[in-house]
Length: 168
Image 1: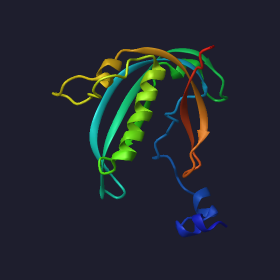
Image 2: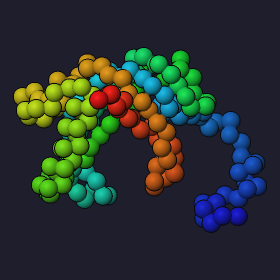
Image 3: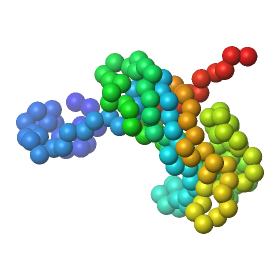
């Protein structure tokens, strides 16, 4: 038996004998691999902490909603179940490291440009502050692929957005 199961206090026999009547059913919230049309529903900056609440970060968030499903190519996923689902992209900006912050902001600007939006001027994204390019992305629509990728740390499958390359 693996250490992970032994260390949790559960054995094969105890798992097999569990009454799971009161355990809630769960479904994957991720999008299946395929081609989608997305609409930006939210785009903002927020303060957060990382590394066991010891380091400050500014988190840039772009929330996307599936408004049209062109194709779903991954087994176990149905197109009708994907419409209306959300996909969130986020970037963690380290305010204590100007070089790292500039690089992360560069990735954010690249994503916004690849969506087909203007990424010039201020970032914006904070309520009560002047609007910037993040604010201007809200309601923008674009087509992109979702591919399934294994998370390096957990091994779980994650939905990764990939922009469709335009022909030169």
